Amino acid sequence: MMHVSGHKTQKTFMDYIKLSSDEIADEIDAIVNGAKEEVF
Image 1: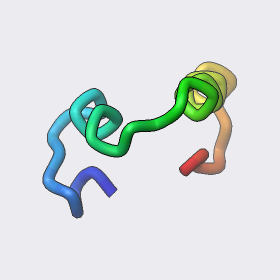
Image 2: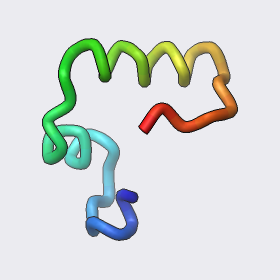
Image 3: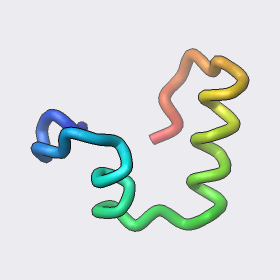
């Protein structure tokens, strides 16, 4: 998705899509726990 939208860093992409704090927490949890499925 970042490639399609032209964002080079995850931070700028996250700023752009305006995720809620719960969605950000879910993404961090997925990264930390090595989830194989994408959260978004």
